[in-house]
Image (cartoon, rainbow, N blue to C red; front, side, top):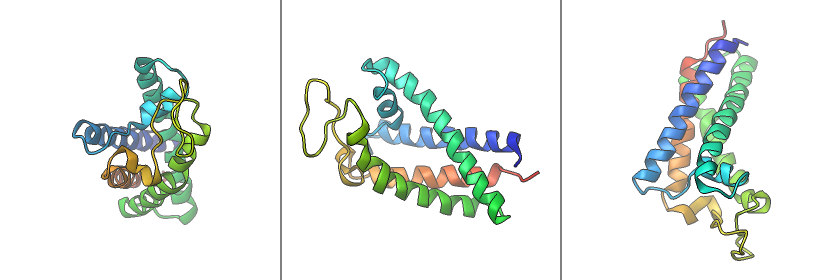
Length: 158
């Protein structure tokens, strides 16, 4: 594994993914901010949650980039197209597994079965995160495909 290449690819890929998601939020294509959701799990302070969540998202992006690199190394091939395919699979796992589990583990998120409480005031994402906007799933898929493409384009075995 080429650590410097992996770290650079992960950093660039994560910045692209986060920028796409933030841009989509600014364009009102989605109301979901994954960095905010991550940070809000740690602190109730909205401003601190955004900062903590952004930093957590960067670390998570590096960890996921390492997983992509392990897959590239195991298959002996790396390309933007392979990264895009892994990114598509990654986005489907996020939408079909991670997002539905959020209300069960997030201390400040209401669930679909139990409405908001004084502590749990964040709206649950719903199926495919559609409660955050009808284009949210598309935003997640596109952002993760571009994340994977960046990893595949920038990572070098040696």
